[in-house]
Length: 154
Image (tube, rainbow, N blue to C red; front, side):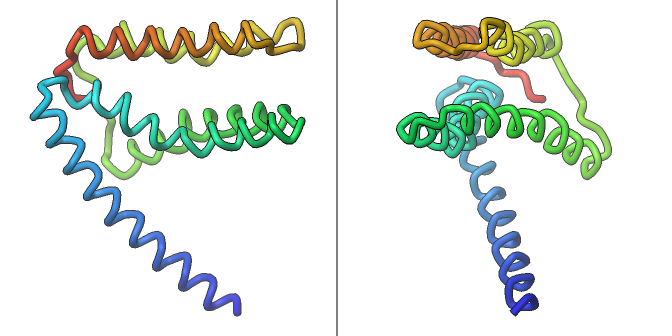
């Protein structure tokens, strides 16, 4: 049975890679058609799509009166995204080359998005007001990305 599971993992991994290729082609097309730039489109559509599982885990955990599950899930996912995903991209591509003002602008917002929940948790409680603050930060970042109409490629 183990062999069957391993073959299924390989098969679905192959499908995931192919689906990723199709998604990237379509996101590039959307960026061209809307003239919003690849970064703006991916920071919104792709990031939203990949964050939906964490969002639904958070909602389900809150409804089940176990909100701490959500916190552990999102911290683990962010660590994986910031190290595993970026590290894998650098490893397989040879380098991740950053162009334009990306470091000055977007890394600041990434740091703020990571630090804000931790700062709001100093009192060991993440309230509805804190949640509203975090959602506002996300909305502000997306507004900034779209209004600046970034055309920079990462």
